[in-house]
Image (tube, rainbow, N blue to C red):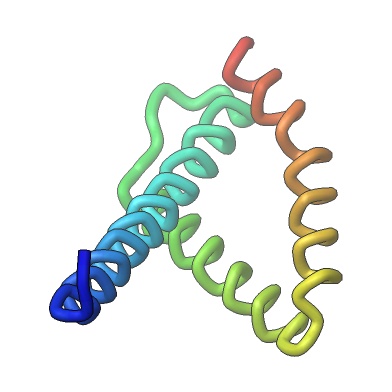
Length: 96
């Protein structure tokens, strides 16, 4: 495109990443609240549950990033293995 668009493209890329991050943080909290509701056989989940699980996923994600601060390959390996092990459980909860 050209040198003139460098800052514009950087801003748009940053805005996309911030939007994606906020969407994922909200989504994980809602999915965790729904999973707990399904496991406890409640009729519906409360907003407090969504806030709790959103904060829990935010802080646990930050803890993983800080724990593997200088080891990107090990962090990716940990996250991929965790996702591989948790995905069947979430799929089973959604199916049932």
